[in-house]
Image (cartoon, rainbow, N blue to C red):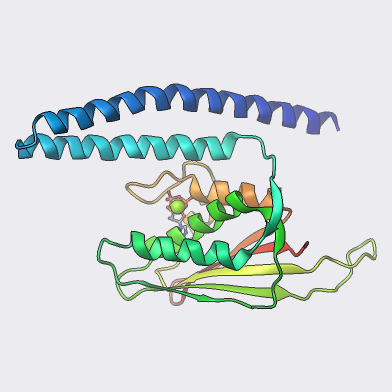
Length: 240
Ligand code: ADP
Ligand code: MG
């Protein structure tokens, strides 16, 4: 128990530190963004300048993202539980991600939902973060003509645990892609904060996913193979 208290204490002061830091960084960042936009209005005909400003704004946005993600990772988990329509959350993300693929990539994102899945008790905004991260990773892993499949299914696991209790039913969501798969050395490290193989990655996505899944008492697993691609499976207790 003492360990648990110490751990909770450490996490909550880390959360407070992150929240303070996020605030301190976002304010001046807002100032930089505003000044850059004013500069752009001041010199509308200077093409070179506009290009520099575009780079500045993009980098400001990137720092913002890192701060947001760090905050998500460090802030103590207090779940706002409501009945969440999982399929609406997933199809909203799919729509969003299809639109974000404006860079001309033709990867298709498909969804296959089991209509018998009822609303589940969960934190909707955290579930959105979780599946957005996984679907984004899958989308980033595939090239042109790539396929990302988002599938929901019920795991009817009525087996007993050691205490002889029935295990809860779970819902499983698979995010599958036909990308290059994940090499062993990446598999070992990919849930570690700041681990990334991408030039513009933050390396925080999967760490956040793992935190959200464990806060929901769920499980996350990955199955990857260079010839078929990668499947991330999230299992959540079907409480409703
Ligand atoms: P980021 O996306 O910012 O790199 P993540 O924590 O989301 O950070 O992912 C960490 C790393 O895991 C990625 O850089 C990538 O190497 C690997 N990865 C995650 N998902 C996939 C996937 N679907 N296919 C191949 N590699 C993946
Ligand atoms: Mg990512």
